[in-house]
Length: 280
Length: 353
Picture 1 (spheres, rainbow over the protein chains, first blue to last red):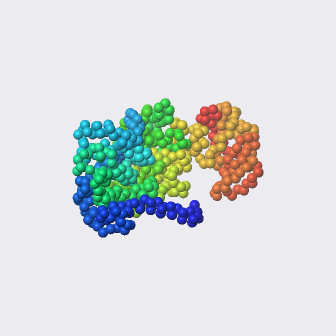
Picture 2 (picture 1 turned 90 degrees about the horizontal axis):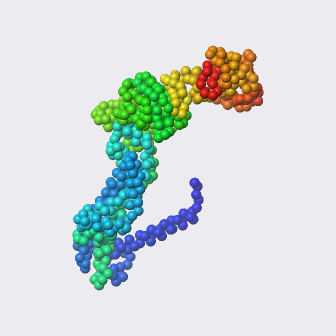
Picture 3 (picture 1 turned 135 degrees about the vertical axis):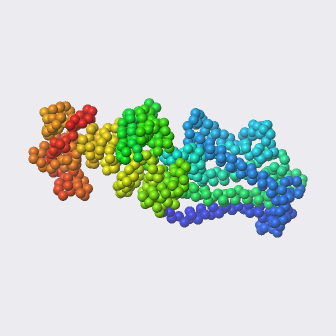
């Protein structure tokens, strides 16, 4: 359609820039703060330009943690978060893709009942079922472990995959049957490659979800070596008399943002490509 | 190389009977076309031969062995689908090789077969492309290549040309026919297009509402259709049907026109439907019994179609050579030779002569 509205275009761009500024400015400030001495941050002389001690601050954060309150080194916490987020993302994808495959391509009693049960649990966030889940995990002796951190959060993204699988034409399944592909072969050779873009999109979402988890790691781990980074940041900020090491906190925050951003960039090409091109 | 035999094949979905008992024997190397309107059960029949639908009653035998209980991959058949059903993420080469790889064939043999089929179908330059980078006709050829490399006992075609434009369809049906002749593989071909059916079939099966109304060579079905349905389905433009009364060796149409008949029908009587093909109507014969008031003329180039109303009621379509000049509104005197008259029982639709 031919559109000739320069003023509307300008207004749209202005709004976009304002929005970006509102979102990006605090991040910029965090970055600036992470490069200053703590004194500068606390007494307000920080200004808007990066300071002089970036490497010192980041090194301290990564390897030593805060001094005022004992906390684990950020590198270790990031490692914990990474394991947790990866396990959650990959685990969720693996389980949901297989259950969606079963629901769509097979016929068995109570098939739709199971599907709707799974769908209902999708609607229950962790916080709603926190109490029974904690009891089960603790009874199974999984507190303070990677297993305990990750397994209870692998609910399902079955719905997404089911909707996608429904778009796979029946003729393709029949052609594969005639070509001698059994169910698992068909899954491996045809369904998985076609699901790549959906898996990439889901991976991004689930990774960030796993990375940002606060309540569950808080409950499940008491050993400070198992702290995740999100929890770690919270712990660094003190509300009592002791002075918070703001420069470390800021540095840690910047570091905490990097892996999700990296994942989004890495996967973006893959799932934009999938959204744009039509498979025939 | 194999025969395909369908005996008393019936299909029921729940309580709905879809196929009411079909008997068909396909000889080795024959191309049999199943043709009929949408919903007549032709695709269901094909899919039962393929093993994609369960057979409710009856038997299907491929090369003498009953295959009712066999899975599609064990029947040694290959199918070409209406929407090609190519694997979108695989190259043309992989699409053709997939079935062979699943059967554990060794790499050199697969390569030989795929390249051979690609050469026959002129796909050699396209082997590394993905399906979305191909045109409709090319995709159809890849789908056929996938079937050819299997070297199966039978080819099954499910309306493969329906998604192509008219010109490509004409081109492809010639290619398919030539290829089938060359390879000599028994083939079952389903289509709703009677032109495809007539041009490609060694023998034709006309299906209507789950019943095979007539099985025979294309010319048999054209010259002596067994039922009104077959008569109206085969031949383009379609046969004209006029109600009339058969008695005393002639058919009397509404309006009084009288056409004599011979043969077994001469001694019969009753209400009939008279069938006349547009191309068998003669202009200005001696003693022309029919008078047509011309309403519309369609010029097709080599011939023209005249639509009009008969004196005494009823509409008629006539085909004439393009050279003859006819004016709209004029009245034509028409006749039909006796041997080109088709008589059908008005109630049941069965052929009388």
